[in-house]
View 1: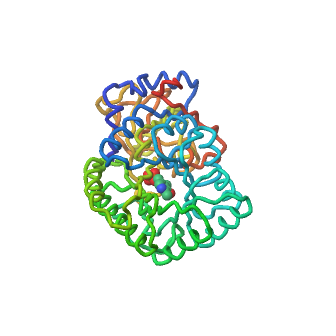
View 2: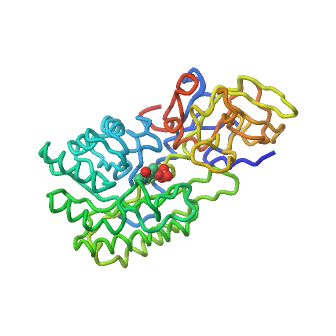
View 3: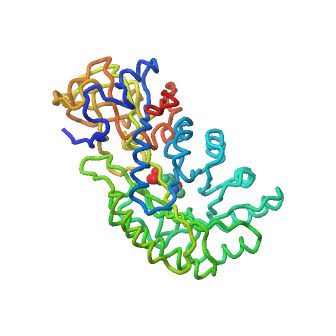
Length: 412
Ligand SMILES: *Cc1c(COP(=O)(O)O)cnc(C)c1O
């Protein structure tokens, strides 16, 4: 038997698994079929409220839409945040179709000319990843006759300790090395661009509160040094994010109240070069990850060499991360439950596998659960971020899952 992660508190309490005020079975019935992702918007709104209460007043909260670009979710979250971060022209079109007024910023290496042009025409802030990209953006802006909004993404000279994906302190396709930043900012200002400031993103999926606090302090100090070197105040310093969520056994929640207190303290003694700057966090998984549940039906049960397998109609083509194949080094179990028996005593040890012909397709490895019979629904938690759109949906030709936004007044 192997341990699994903890079911988010908001979903504990009823064996039937209540999502947005309705039992999971009702969502399955309304959708007509499994597999199905249900995102509980009440949880997302509560997270944003908790974050705002914890953080210093005036700190911007941005949503990194790649975490979950489900259009109704984007439409619902946009009024609650100060900005949306995109990573492609596809995401730009998606966001603009859902939210017409929210400020947008665009990061990511390899932005094509047509993407830069779409961003410039839409007045989106482009977080520049290189000098070459700056030159292309300036040339495109000249051609279309619009001064571009440009920020410089900095490749920080430190990393976010303990983060699942480190993005700083090393050679990187992301951002501009610190020593090259002042000259690049001067170049874009001299060219008449609207310089929006810095974007400094040092890592992702960090659960170590002290490391996040330390990284934010280093980020402010770095932004201050760069501002001094440039001789101008950055209008916005995007501090990145990196707040993780507890997927696995032994993981703990990030202490956002402690982070907010430390950031508030740091902001009372800002470097001179940042007086007048605004600041923002950009978060993806922390805002939406715990709100999602993937529901998949048991198609078969089988015994093999002393092990019991529960075979479902879902799998890694929809929820790759739960199978341990999206950026994890050691496979560990996400929290899972049998719908109708959530919280009841375990009766058997089973492995839950998906319907794909590959041994990679394992949603849970030797976990203790109440009995899940053919026809029962299995819930895989922590499915709100990097789920469907971070999975190889075309692999093996199964149909796409449905997605539902629950707990959102206009959409139920
Ligand atoms: C992916 C990404 C994020 C969001 O990361 P999470 O771990 O989901 O919070 C934020 N900013 C940038 C630049 C990113 O690439």
